Length: 199
Image 1 (cartoon, one colour):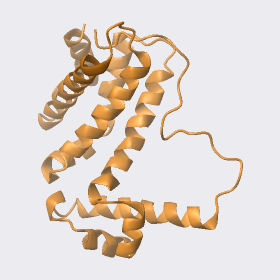
Image 2 (tube, helix red, strand yellow):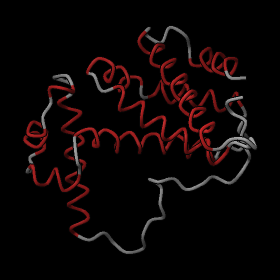
Image 3 (spheres, one colour):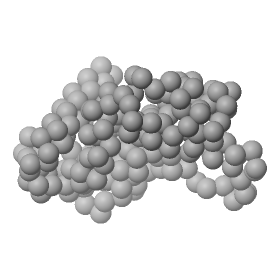
């Protein structure tokens, strides 16, 4: 079963660290503002052109920052989307981890609701050519969730790696197909289907 997990207190995730009691320094605040500007600018550009056609110069001009500022924060433009998606995915799996009752039904419902909520972003990623970045981020986040919750004795090494990949690909592309088809099925119908497919 996909959602056979051990019940445990919600765990901290990569993007949900304890807040420091010290106020942010000016440099930290500026770095955060720069990253937010770069991220916003990239997604605005994606409204106009395909991902492959967007250059670092396009992004920095739109954001009003230098190329040096970009490379102080990112190695490449893929990383901008990866960090943005990591925040979204981590928020979702944190919510799942804090559910009072994690059953196949409740997890499937939350998962479908998540893809429904961000369906515009996923549809754009399919149209603009950056869907694979979203998939790889999802696969990593789902893998982290499984590692902390799966109870199987033989869930380790190669078996765990390919199980994570298999489940991530199956779930992700079912949802991409659902979105491409205009979400013909309701959230409840899709949640029931996902539960049936994975039990």
